[in-house]
Amino acid sequence: MNFDTWPTTQIQPRDSTCTGCHRIGVYETCGQLTQWATGLAQPPGANALASMYPLSHYMPPYHGQTEASWNVINGPSVAAISTCCLDPTQPSCNASQIERYLK
Image (cartoon, rainbow, N blue to C red; front, side, top):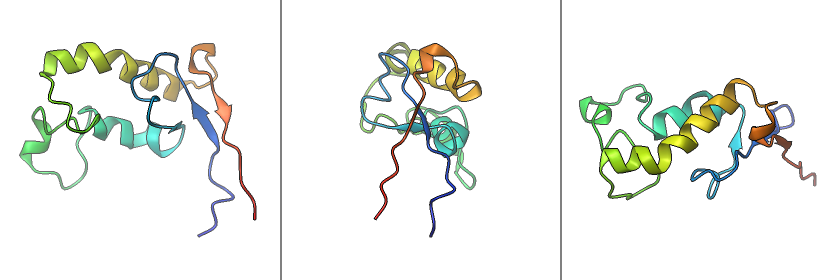
């Protein structure tokens, strides 16, 4: 597969619990992956359990938190990413280009 045409912009909101481990691109990750991982939407074909906490939130993995704790710890990061996905040019998004590595 040729990846030369894929978008290369990433966002890195400051103090994000998400970007400590992940590079958040403005394409798929902004599109559906963030929503699926954080319980904002369920993947197609998911069963009813996927809409109930904690199974609705698979990031961070094995978090063992109550829903209220998860929302306090991770909610602001998810909100910042969601806002940046709508407009990555905001200064707080720290958008940058992902370097392409050519052979």
